Length: 104
Image (cartoon, rainbow, N blue to C red; front, side, top):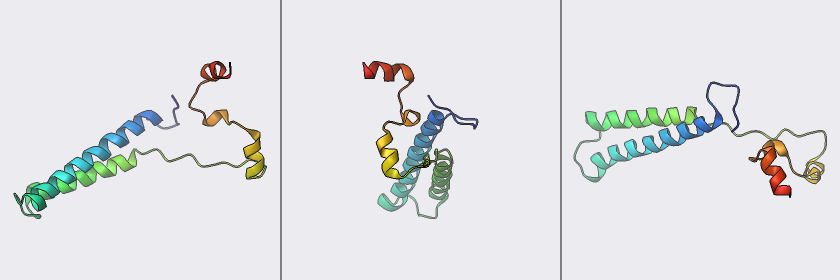
């Protein structure tokens, strides 16, 4: 359970990202369904526009909450030398106890 220096942990940010992106997709899809598929409302009608704006806001919050991928921080050697060094424990999802059980 890794945490970053911000206010939210990486896991919470991942859950927020997924929640808001899925919510944005559902809201935008419903707006398009109401206007284009069923013709219940015009594309410029208030309910459709409100859902489109809401979906875009939810999508923006989802993108904001996304954790940036960690960049490769090369060491002093070349990529081939780094590949020969073996397993990088910092990038492992397993803790030390799990690694010990795996090695047994």
